[in-house]
Amino acid sequence: MPNLIFTILFFVIGFLISLFFYGLKAYEIHGIPEKDKNKLRRINQYWLNFLGSSIGWIFLYYFLIFRLHLFTPGESIMKFEGGLSDLIVILVVFLGITGHLPYAVLLKGIFKT
Image (cartoon, rainbow, N blue to C red; front, side):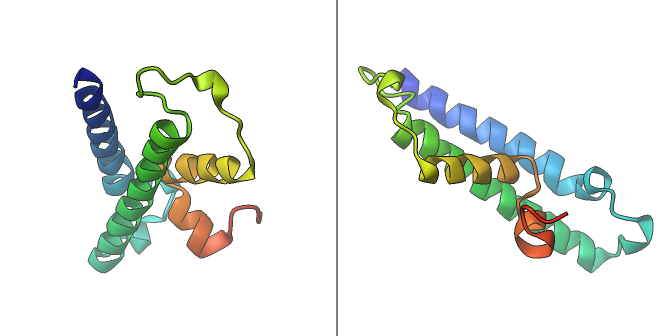
């Protein structure tokens, strides 16, 4: 039972911090010009970063709990054999939690410069 409580607290606290930081401060983080800060764009940016962060934290939960069995008693992380799908999950986790998933998916793509 303590593992379950710790797991839930870890993800809820991390998600809320990420949501606040990347949702409310998205303009400053991503260097969006001051002239683009109207109310509708701010709401759109906020929910888009909220969605991206949510997806990142959900994928992190999936990866740690179901792929690595990190919080499962009796399971060893040494049994993990990663593949291409795990690499994609890790990429989505990174882009989502850091607030770059909406930008990578909607505007520029992941590998374009």
